[in-house]
Structures are given as structure tokens and as C-alpha cells.
Image (cartoon, rainbow, N blue to C red):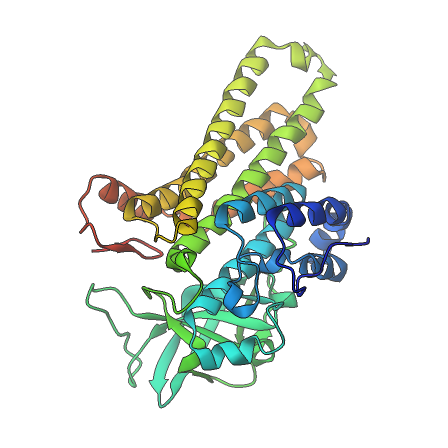
Length: 408
């Protein structure tokens, strides 16, 4: 493969058209290597190298660290195509963009200088959902725990880790809103040990292994490489930085879902058009044609909602303004709605295909991947309840969205 366009570290900032041209060249490799990645449980080295060279892992990184700072909407169209080709490849790309971008806009300058000393082409993985504990000490935190779902961690250089803050006695510390205080910590890959337990239904090639601290019970992480889970204003990154962890995480999973859901319906068409069974030619069935049209409409409507929502947010940021509470509410609501729709349309496709999706085919893989992606904590009913509260106008008009709800 010859990625003839300027590499990610070029002086020329790539455009969305550049990224799509790079995808044209690398997607055949992603498709070809998908089976091998699924078998070993993480992405193959050659695909990761190609995605890094194309800049796909760092599309959203702010210009302050040398990134292209692509708009969320434009980056969504790139992730959609990658996820359509291999859902696990798309998942790893969204993880690196989300975790790397939030680190770049939130950590202190000293931390930034250390992490990005060789440029913005870094890999990062881990789990910001708190599964460990952070004890404050002079200059930082001592962290400990066991974290799950470290997607793409096999190829990570930096680890993104969420911890509940505790006092010296180990008791959790609570904020003014009554919720536990959480800190996101960043530390080098060689500080953790992978626990090798990624034996799952779908997204098998993401290598989302559990991990823990290596060769010690606790690890010191300096304050300058951490940020508060519910941090407000970013330190850098332009208006889009206001999306924060709440917005970038929603962008990530929405982008992934629309590509993955589209592929499932397209695989069904390949199966149905040429199939004849005891009941005749499947594509001639009036019942099937009616149901297929309904499911196609549901998916396209959900995708259109995602595009409308993120085009609005991106236009607002491009105008130098911060996304409104209403826009952030729709970002969170769209996230859950799109996943509900691909779960429904994916199940329809699986059942309509009958035995075709039972075999080890792309259709079976995408069905498993869809119903793995819907298990993420960001799809929790409680977040949709918060969307309803915001749509009713119940929170303070100036209240900001956090990852799990509106703070106020």
C-alpha cells in the first residue's frame, strides 16, 4: 500500500477530503486483515501502522499539539467508513481520538510537553470509567485497581485511567452534587500489566483487555497528567474543546454505530437477492420487502439525526461559539437512539438471513459487534432520563452536561 498523501506529521494540515482519499487506499487492507485480527483478539500490526500513518487515530487532536483538529462532523464521516469495513478497527480509532483529544485539551502544560514531546502521533488506550482508586499525595495521586475494556491497549503508548478519589483512609470523596469525585490519570504503557481476558461475543479484535498496575500495588501519577472527570472549560483546543469527555465520547460511539449498522443491512441484501428456499425466491416475499423497507427507513432516519446533530454542533464550533445545553442534550440522545436502531435493524437482518449469519462471515461478525457496542455504559437508561429532564427545561439553563448527566 502506498499512502502517497502527506503523512500525519506533515506541515500541511490534512482536510477531510485527504482523509477519505487515504481511506480509499487503506480500507482493502483493513478488510483483508479483519479475520486475522479477530482470531488473535487485537488489531494486526500492519493495519495499526497504516491507520497511524494516515492520521486516522489523531484526526480530532487539537492544533496546539500538532493535530489537524478536524471538525467532529467531518471526522464522523471518516469513522463511519472505517467502521463499515471492520467494526473493531473503527472502535480502536474512536478510542484513540476521544482519549487523546481530551488528554490534549485538559492536562497541564507540563504533562502536554512530556506526552507530545515527539509530536502528536501517539497511541492511547484505557478506561476512563472509574474502576480504581486515587489517593491524593504531594504532587499527584497514588492509584490502584483493576480496569476493564482497555480497547486497543495492545498498541497503546499511554494509558487513560479513571479512578474514584479517596481520602487517606480509603473512603470515597464526594463533590457538591453528591456524586463521587473522579479523576482521569495518564501514565506510560510500561506501568501496567495486561490480564489477557478478552474472550467476548463481539468486537473481538479491539483487544479490550483488563489491566492493572505492574509490579506494585500503587502507581504515582503527577497532577499535571490528570484532569477532573467533570472538568468544565478546556485549557486549549478551540470551541470544540467545550465538548469535553461528555461530547467526544458521544461523538465516538455514534460515529462507530452508523458505519456498523449500515454494513449489517448491506450484508443482508447480498444474502437475500440470490436466495431461493422452500418458500421460493426470498426477495419476492411481500412480507420481507415490507419489513426491509421499514428497517431501511429506520436506519436512514437515525443516521440523518446523527448527521443533523453533529453538523449543528460543528457549525457552532466553527463560528467560535460553544455548543449549547440543547445541542449537547441532542448529542447524548442521538447516541442512544442510534444504538437502539442498529440493535433493532441488526436483529431483523440476522433473523431474515436465517442460517446465513450463523456462519463465520462478515454478517455474523457485524451482528455480534452491534450487540457488543450496545452494552457500553454510555447507553444507560439513566442518561436518556437526563435527556428528558433537559428537554423539559428542568435543569438550570447554564448547567453543563457531564458524561452521565446534566450538572444542575
